[in-house]
Image (spheres, rainbow, N blue to C red):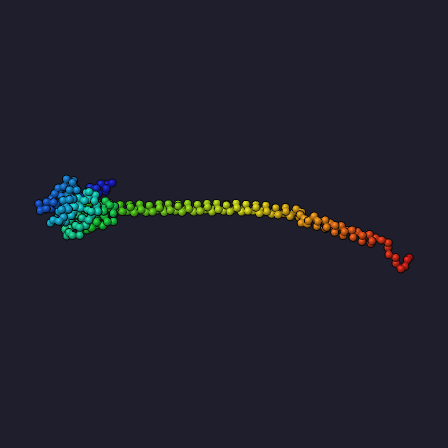
Length: 247
């Protein structure tokens, strides 16, 4: 919390004032509005002053006014214009520092770290830049750890989903196997019933396919055959045959 409080107190650098305020009334009015907390009016005056002689100072202060209104992207552009164009080491270092603050507010840790390092190269004694650099580095590590944890959680969730899918597949397979076994049992029962019916059918006498007349003729023929056999048998049971000698 101490670092956050320090950061909050250090976010806004003092607005740079022109040595010759009378040379640019818009810059002067903008500075006045800024210190009164009227950042919108200050922004408008600084925009007008940007075309004047004190363009770099006006751009820097315009960035501050936009920053105070939480227009961090616009403020960063103004600071970048100052960084790219000025040869004033003090102003360039301050612009790098303030640009780092805009990145810090947007949680762009890498950009903030780069800006604070650039500010410290130009002004190694800038304690505020050191504090904010350390804070940005710490927040970057914290965010990276959070992302790693989040990835681990997502992996665990994905694994749980895969495990659940696998369990469901296994259950489906078991159900399908049970269904197949049940169907096979029913088929076996049907086959057994068919076999029993077939065996029962074989045991029963075959019905005659002869007509009544054919059956009567068949019986008469059997009777005649039986009668003939009986007559032959009776003939065979007659007197014994005499031999030539009788003793």
